[in-house]
Structures are given as structure tokens and as C-alpha cells.
Length: 284
Image (tube, rainbow, N blue to C red; front, side):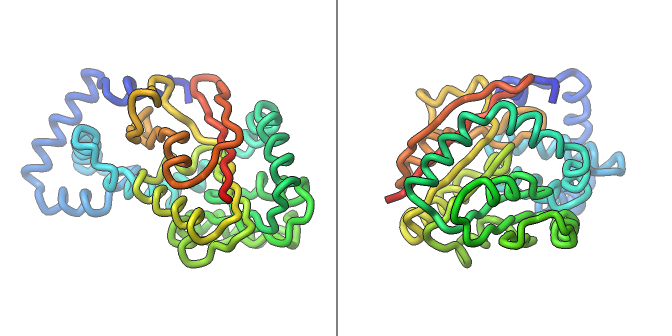
């Protein structure tokens, strides 16, 4: 990530990008059957020229129409497929270089809240290669079970076959929202780190957090998520696509508070060309 993660960056397009989008618009009209297929099942990494151009048009159209459903389907395609697997192979260093080096203050706050409230279970959404879940399971006292939810089946297979994880940890290939509604339990610490909730549309997060608050309390949620540096939370509670990925910059204060949580810690941390917001929220 070497370009600023901003709403402005998502809004502005170069002449080359504009030309691709226009060509895609023309092709979308000609190849209407293929276009409908790509609307229903977007491809995050298209290979053929036709699909590349049509997808460029569809992404721009979805951005203009604020079509959050389309972007969520697009993100699912990326993380389920080869893109998610490549990310895991290339980005394990981020746990040590970013989380351990720059988020110690946030983890220290989490440890204090954990000790006060004494949850029994940890659930990490988008656990990737499991490094953070392993760290939390061994660093926090009294953990009875830990569950890593990951949408990429290949990554889950690797985690399950590895012998490096604490025996209390279980890895599952599942959609985090669906798993939570069917399997979540009280006295849990829910975790997302490094960019997970940014790929969920706001309506799904509302459903998940309301379910936790109404049915799974007491609970703690620890979220470390990127946000657009030009997303003014004082002016809007809307979730807005941002950056090159067109993931969602959520208003995390409103997201948690409007769904019944109390925020007990929140801090912005600058990383290279992007900003992470660490939030710890609790239920009664």
C-alpha cells in the first residue's frame, strides 16, 4: 500500500482508468449476458480483456450508485480465492512489524479489560495464518477455547495441518457473519485485525453486532481496521468505499455505539500511507 487510503483516491480516476471504464461500458451493452453474470458474481482478478474492461465499468458504476452488495461480493471472491492465499504468504511479517510494534498500547488496554471481565472464548474473524490468535490465546489468561474463522479454504487447511498452534485453537472455513449467528456464544472476545470488517457492508455488521449485544453478552469486541483519512465521522455515519480496493471505511464509533456497545478504548494509529483505528467495545 503506497497510495493514500482515502475516499478522494477512490473518487478520482486517471485518463487511462476512465478510458477502460468507457470501453467496459460499451462492452457491457454488447455482451449483456456476460455482464449480468459478472454483476451477480463479480471477479476480483479477471484474466481476459473483455472481463477486465467490463469489471472496470461495473466497479465504477457500483461506486457511483453506492452498491455495497456488489462490493461485498467482489471482496468475498478475492479472499476466497488465490488473492487471499497470496496475501497470507506475503504478509505474515505484518503481525510483528505492525501489530506488535505499533499496537502494544491497544493490546495492553485489551489485556486489562480481559482481566476485568474474564471472557472464556476468543473468536477471530479473518484469522489468516493464525499468528494473532495464537498470540492472544497464549498471552491472555484463562482462555478455554479459541476459534479462527477464515473464508479462504486453503489457508484454513494449512492452519489445521500445522503443529505450531495451541491445542485450544480450532480453525474453521466459514463466513464470519453466518457462523456468528449460528454458533456464537456468550463470554467471548471477538477480534478483527488488520482489515476484516472493512470487507463487510454496514448492514451485515449491524446484524452481527446487534446479535452479539442482544444474545451473546457479556462480550468484548477488539477491532483494528483501516479507515479513510478523509472520512469525517462528525459529518456522516455512512460507510464509504475507499482506496484502491474499494473496501468500506466505516464510522467505528457509530457502528459499535448504535448497536448497543460501549466503547472503552479507541485510538488511531498511522501506518506508512494508511491509518488504522483500534476500537475496544463491550456489552453489559
